Length: 173
Image (tube, rainbow, N blue to C red; front, side, top):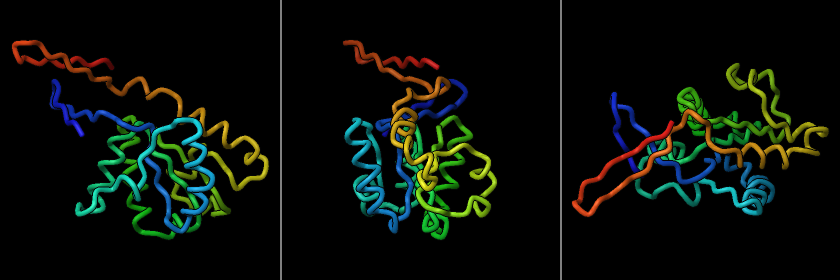
């Protein structure tokens, strides 16, 4: 993880994955069999709790770190997700970072009542795997969204080192 302070004390994080997957462990089977296989097949890099959360660190710190290290956050919305406090904390963090330019993608996988979703999610466009019509195109839509280049307002940072051990940082926004 690299933290870089640039003019006006802005902090940028160098993303190492396209997406952080936020889901309920109760949905692990669906996530593994449908989502992760799809992303692996399309070479979409992702961060996910069981392989990327650092043992020994507080859960909330590790989760925020994974969000920062990704270009997008993919929320696997389900009845189980909405009933779990840790999932709600991940959703709050994803929404916080979305206000700063990180893309938030919501994929509804079961019949969680849209009316019970928080307004900030209910009013977003999302991929609805639970809907039989949308299920026909969910894979293509999701892959297109996840493979889309990062948002134009996210900086691209490069380092230049010279033999005199001076370093310079360039940013492109």
